[in-house]
Length: 186
Image 1 (cartoon, rainbow, N blue to C red):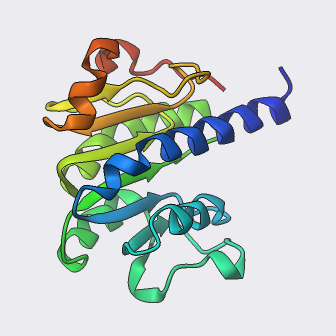
Image 2: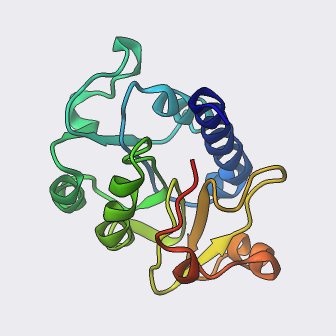
């Protein structure tokens, strides 16, 4: 598979997972977080899915298309390990949905991020909140969500924090995230 084909499959998996969880997320109170703003395509998609929600974005620097840059009070610049901790004090609430696509092209970086990312997200996640991420994470109390039809279960990952109707609906199709941590597919 060419890198272009792999990229397209990753983006389709990302979009399809976000679209699949959107109805359940709309029923949950809380913010939307985009970890890894990049060029802003996913941020723009999240704005369409959740037009009435505060969406906060994180990245080292702004490289997004000008139309896809969050307002300054919803943009956290710097190392996500630090900005995720700092943002908890300034967001004014917890997240109903967190999307992360950090290190999307670097398998070693993706694995390294898994070591710290889950605990940082968990500190910001509302009970029943949903996490859609490009790497397997192992966080106590999170349940793995089955991917939408046609998505390779190792391509993109979904989790639900604690008990919720979303987690219970997928309980028969869950996989253990701990067994998959470190397995990266591009």
